[in-house]
Length: 128
Image (cartoon, rainbow, N blue to C red; front, side, top):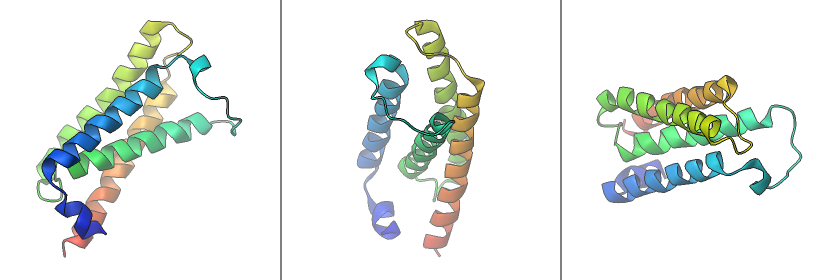
């Protein structure tokens, strides 16, 4: 399975990331009343933030072929965490029921870092 994923052509990889980022943007900027009301446990939104950016970082590592170019990891960290911070500032400036949260930024950032570490470990082991 990993070998197949690593064989996917670059344009498909990049398109996957672009579509995912657009999805994050849509979910991040929709007014809260437009989102489905699903009863979850307290703090579930932080788990959701973590998972969204965990997947984002893995897709981005995959798109930029970091299994061959580890030097691109710093760029991915800066861009993905920066995107999360940008979404929080846009939510703050929109004033449509969304609010800025340092906890959301922390969950996003932790998701990015964990995703990158897991991607690197899995890619390194699969290339052996």
